[in-house]
Every structure is written in structure tokens, then in C-alpha cells.
Image 1 (cartoon, rainbow, N blue to C red):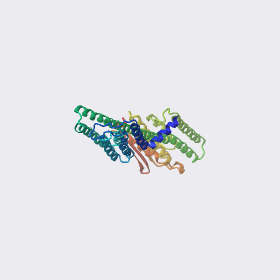
Image 2 (tube, helix red, strand yellow; image 1 turned 135 degrees about the vertical axis):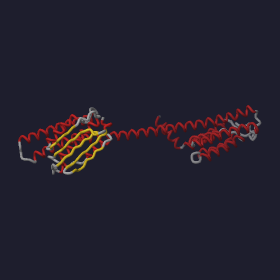
Image 3 (cartoon, rainbow, N blue to C red; image 1 turned 180 degrees about the vertical axis):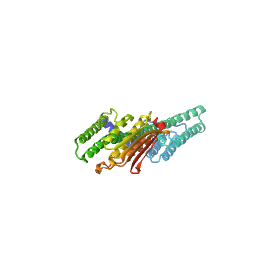
Length: 397
């Protein structure tokens, strides 16, 4: 039953114009067969004694305008109005009124707001004309003429109101659909942005923590392999490699836990208290580090992490590009800023291509410092390299 009903609805929608026009004609034939005709006999031009079948003379041409209303709505409305007027003054059938209401409804439904206003004024004028015709041509008493005009006004006005209400409901539904689509697009953009930010965060953490530990392992192993075997030194190198491997393993486990379960904190949170261990690791990597670390607290968490990451990244780069170099690490307060300087002199670079690096470390450091309103400069100096970062005091405090 449901499939049959669906088929009937689809068939009606495909042939709606023809079926609607045919329905009006068949209804008019039924009315004529029942002997109903001459509904507007009060008009002076009405033909007395006319057969009820005469009403088909106006119904048939009126039904044509139901077929043309989609392609030429204004033409169809004018044509239906003319046929209805002729019918009103002569045979008095019901069919032309139904056609006029159908075409008027369609016109009001698909018209723009400006056209709808003009249609409303046309209905008002038509009602006034009907009132004047009933009063002057049909010689009706004033109350009867007024009631007749009011009835036609109610019929046309209700038809117009229904069409406008349906159109506005459709427009409102379309507006809500567009807003829903826009909200869905915004949500998708937010999701993509969140994914991008998460990937960037994980990439930074992998570079800052895991890649640093793995590189330290490689550098220490390379340093041990580049010299003559020595049991004590080699065991110390192996121990350093083991410690770096365990640190990298812990960081990876933390990140994997977050990615799988969404729990925990993937971010390493280096603190100023970690600087001594970072400097000791750099010394075990073969650097000759001299550190002058002034107490600069209190610092915000973001600023403290940025200070530590700057020193750590600079020392890793020294170990990679200037093994055995003399390195000065300076952390101090200058006027309204916190300053970090790492200066290396001398040293030799490993010849293994895999140690060359990608250049991401310094670029990500510049992003971190820039987000806090600071500046970072890195470049060659006489016999070495310098990394100089400055964080505003009002941001750091």
C-alpha cells in the first residue's frame, strides 16, 4: 500500500498541471450535470434561462491558464482574471473562480516580496471594483453590495495569505538549512584546524623530546666509535645512550596513550630546574659548557618552557654541528626582558649525513618565541654560532 501511494504521489507531481486543470473541468461538468449554474445572476449582463452546461464555455478557456502558469505566471493571472470577469458578468460558473484562485496562489507563492505587494494592492482594487459594480451596475442595496465585496475579498485574501505563508515557511526552512550547512562547514573547518594544531603539537613534541634524545644517542655512540676503545669511556657512553633511550621511550609512551585513549598530557613540561641536567647531557656529548644562569622567576609556564627549549635546542645543534666546542649559556634579566644566549666557538661537525638536521628546530623556536611577543635571532659569529632570544618581561612575569 505504501509503494502504491508513493507511485501515485510521484505520478501526480509529474503531471500536476494537467491533472489540476482536468480536475477543475471535471468538477465543472459535475456541477453542470447537477443543474447548478448562473451563480452570479445579480449582474445585469447575466443571460436569463441559460442552461447550466453553458458554464463550460468559460471553464474550458480558463483551464488553459492553469497549464501556462509556470512558464508565464503574469500572463496566466491576467488571462484568468479576464475569463473570470466575463464569467461573472454572464454565465456565472464556479470553474473560472477556481482557476483564478489557483493561478493567484501560484503567482503569490513564487513571486518576490515586491511583486507580492503589488498583488495585494491588485486584490484590494479588485474588491473595490466588485463593490462598485454590485452597487452601481447590479443596483444592490449598500449593505448587500458591501457584503458581496467582502466575501470576494475574503476568498481572494485567504488564497493570497495561504500562498505567502507557504512561501515564507519554505524560505524560512531554506534559511535554516543554509545556516545548518554553514554551521556544519564551520564545524568541519574547526575539526580540520584542531587536527592540524594537534599534528603540529605532536610534531613539535617529537622534535623537541624524542628526536633530541635519539640524536643524543647517535651522537654519543658516534663519539665513542670515533676514538680508540676504552672500557670506562665506552661504558659511560653506553649508559648515556641507555638513559636517552629510556627518556625517548617514556615520551613516546605518553604520546601514544594520548593518541589511543585521549587521556593524559602529551606535552613535556620542561622547567628551569631541568637546565642543570640538560647542560650535563651536553657535556657528556663532548661540549665544554659554561653556564651563567641568573634567577629570573617568576615566569609563566609558557615562557619557562620556551627558555628551556631554546637552551636545549641550541645545545643539541652545537653537539651536532660543533662537537667539542666551547659553549657559553647565559640566562639573565635585562631591563623589561628575559634574555637567553647560547654562543659556541670551535668544535667539529660530524661527517655522517644523517646528523645534518632539517632546520625545523630553530624555525619552531622562532614560532614559540614569537607567540609570546619575543624575538629570536640565530646565525654565525666569528669562529662559531650564536642563538639569542628575548622575551618581554610583561609576558614572562
